View 1 (cartoon, each protein chain N blue to C red):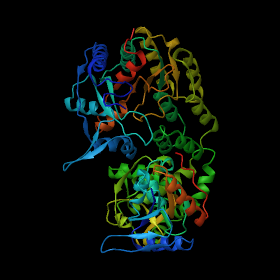
View 2: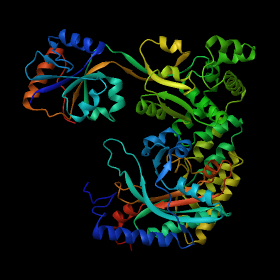
View 3: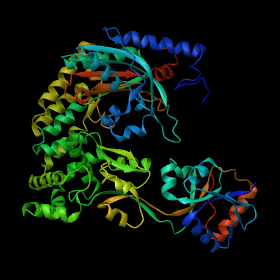
View 4: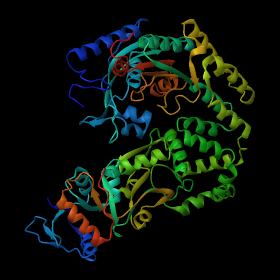
Length: 383
Length: 236
């Protein structure tokens, strides 16, 4: 890589190359800012603690971490969390923000993905009509893509979450499934554990269950070892109680499990899958509200000139990306350019604001464009 | 240019290495001058480099050593995608060490990684922070936890006496090297049944990145013949 090169673009750190990129960024921001978004510039250095608490240890493998005498810091790996924090410090709802700046991601040995690239985006907070806000973000991002050769793909994490809620089973099981929704292998394993493999799990835990039921669990714990560490014997007993309850909870109905798996595999166009989704309500009653939201979004798309019959939908889309999206999700994939990342992506993340706001959540949806990748795709002359 | 062979500069690992090569007709002689570590190898075109076993992986990856003796645990921890840069030639049969995940023995509800995941979720709810795992093997352990889809944990750095972290309330679980298991028992810990991250022993590695001149290749063939190892394919 030459010194003047940047992500996806050669020579775009000086002269004409830089000027072309700056013009492209200005154009994108003027489109994203049309509906009154305030420009924001969050700090590049974010407190590591906040990001670690949110994303877990895996973020260390993905973000650059540094420290001084005061604290451990991370170079922002994206804008969503920094902007939610800025917004919460401001505290005026509703609000919308636009931004552009570099983000930094650690890459593995041998990887040729960029460590630093630009994101230009829009975030909308506290807007009461979620379908409208979802459609607005997609419409503005779509307009900023300005006819570039991309395929738009949408999904809806809210359907899978509602599907889990619709399972007639214990609350701890539903919580465990929800927690691992973004880890497909573990999710599948949990469906087995709570279903076809439940008897096997009960056998494995027979001694524990027996001890709990015969009142000898205290003795078993004392026998096993000295109570060292923060996690107490009461917490151990608490978990054993949950295991006992789990053993007597009826296994998941195989028919419902199949319905949930089928629901998460639905694909087609937004318009064509609507009827299919309605059919699932028979096996998974309780899906209704999520499907109503989906349908309202389609109407909002149509009102903004986005044809639901031409917009691709995959229910599983968003399941392997960052785990904060919990509703509408979308991505724009560069056609015939597997060397480029998604040119744009985004989605709804109401639950994330609740975590960052310590219980004080709000509706939130946003999306980003990668200006360098967009320019690399359009050759600097979007139509 | 000569072939540079990296050998641990002291301790049991060095003794065992010298013995291992000696049994295969390659004599390594220490000839220290004052505090400078020095020595020779009884083969033409081979230069002995004495250095800490912990430095061997990095030196091999950078190509400053052609061959080197170190633990597999150190190579796997220090060198991302190590097999693209290093070749494992021979496991040497000593320096055995297993990297394992251990939790307090009284956690009768936790015997496997999925149990640890469930316990970690509840722990976070109760204590307001993620379950802490003390280790110095950050890369290996993070990758292992990722493969097992464990969510609510965090690593805390521990460069020594890691088994004591739970008693000292600086961690709830540990990921550490155990050769006997008695230290774990003394600290009231037990190994999870699927908690073996890596089985490690002292191993002779070759570097793909080293400058392999005709002379050093000749020396490599001679070493391979003596130790009964197939000549490694040095292409990356």
